Length: 323
Image 1: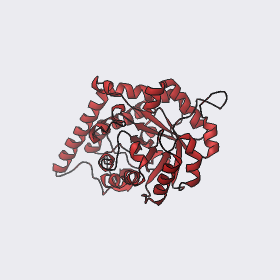
Image 2 (image 1 turned 180 degrees about the horizontal axis):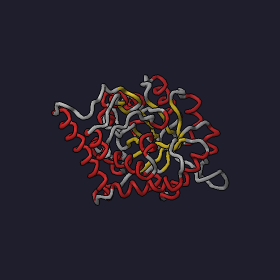
Image 3 (image 1 turned 60 degrees about the vertical axis):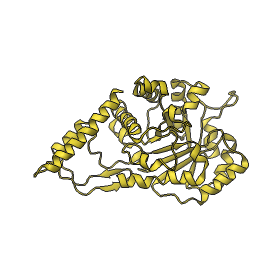
Image 4 (image 1 turned 135 degrees about the vertical axis):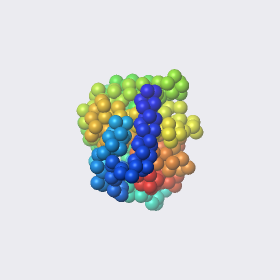
């Protein structure tokens, strides 16, 4: 958890630096009125004086314009898991088609394989469709599997990889998940790359150790991160009704962004959207969205309720206010 401790120190340093700057009669960093661009503030006219240097030394310097994953948009995915019937999915699609969604949000839903074509054929084009998993390579004699080639042929745009239920119920390894992700990306699919620790990992102070190991498996297999969204989902919060506090989630998200900066590149760190999943609902999404490094959500149970899912998508308005 050293990385999360560093994040706390960073935030404290920022606050102290800001207070010192505001009390000085001659502030060393003149910052003009912030403008909203994507999910980050653009500090127009920032002169890198003592305050900026302190911010950067704490790892939280002025990011400037961040074009996140090429769009700068909030990202919300709805994972329907192994739920739904023809009747219930038709109703859910109707609710989503009639929902009013903010413009500054990318929205993706992930129905069970059986209903993917049905959803693609009836869902508004405003919302893209993801698969919940894909195989390590091209199709063939792999009973029960779905290849990325087939998903692309069906009109799917995204695929979820590394979800905790695939890891801990099905038994997929970090290496296998990296391989599957690389192949999906090679076929033009976007990848929602899941990471997250179990309760015993958190209690043993191993949250970042586990998350970084999972990230490294993606990095070992993938050379281009431009079409990847990282989803942090603490396993202990998935479907349990428990949710990481905004501060807990922010600490891990900030640690992930720092890992990307150090292990991949500063550009990838800035552009990659890092979304949170774990009992997200209409009541807690706005507060979570205000955290600087939370760039959206991967939603489970609440994604099966059209109006509530729309509320979560529209939490982007809280992000704008926070920005």
